[in-house]
Figure 1 (tube, each protein chain N blue to C red):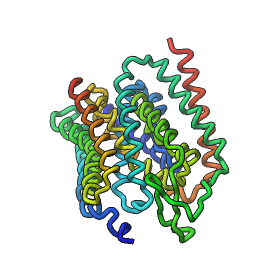
Figure 2 (figure 1 turned 180 degrees about the horizontal axis):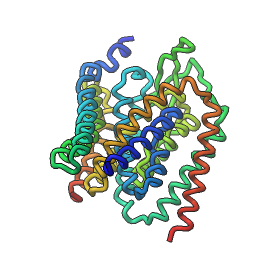
Figure 3 (figure 1 turned 30 degrees about the vertical axis):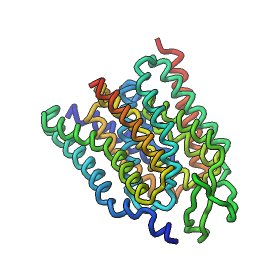
Figure 4 (figure 1 turned 180 degrees about the vertical axis):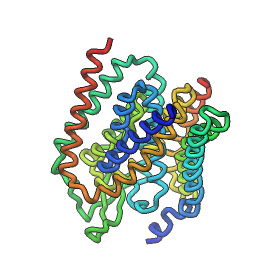
Length: 101
Length: 276
């Protein structure tokens, strides 16, 4: 039962962080849309929309980082190894993306 | 006014796709893509928009705490290793594919899903043995309806990894989440109960989308206002779908969707063959 209590401990405590990211991409995208409608293509609307999309892409990464932090605490090394492989892959994706922009 | 209409169209398409996706538990991308195509957005632009909606739905599902117990994080993260790699390969190679080829790939995917749905119309779940040991990648959760703990084991790991890799490639090429392949495959071949397969996939599919989304974004392939409109639409639609799903007859719904997907498949075969 200890396991069940322990499970999700850190990700429950850090739930505000995931929720904040979700709420912020929602707000940024909505605000960007409204600004875009008010004045299409304005610098401010573009900034909000771009920020919203970037936050959207940040959300899963934040979840992975929280998950790995929790599993390090619980010394679940196989999980930590698998997550590190995924993080390494995501770093390659970012590097490839940076080369294109 | 002229800028409002395309945004509303895309938002509406997102809402319908999100609703259908949530009803069937497979994600809305497979429905969003043909809608966006019909509205005049070409394949890669539609894929970019669709990827953003996949990210949004996955984050919202994962942030909700209702099914935390059902999500098998360990299995989920393991499947992301091939999925992210596939996504990157798909996104890197999509510019080398012709529209004709992408149409044909989409036609094959929708065709296969239609067939899978038809063959699984009456399949409820895998048979579960209470004395089973979950093992490193299995898991357990409490089922409200039966009032007992469901314990399961992962079988055929290579199949699960292979499906995730293919799902990743499709996600990179077409922007549809790989969940549409992963959920039925995990359930049918790998012994994962439907609920755990769906919840795990829904929560983790956003990570798989990260294999390709940044590449589309960096290429400037994502029309930000349209993507925002689609995200809003999909989130509203999937809410509605989740509300409707306990009230809909699963069998008829699957049959209807199989027919719709078979039609979509036929349309894309036609589009591909007649593409000049």
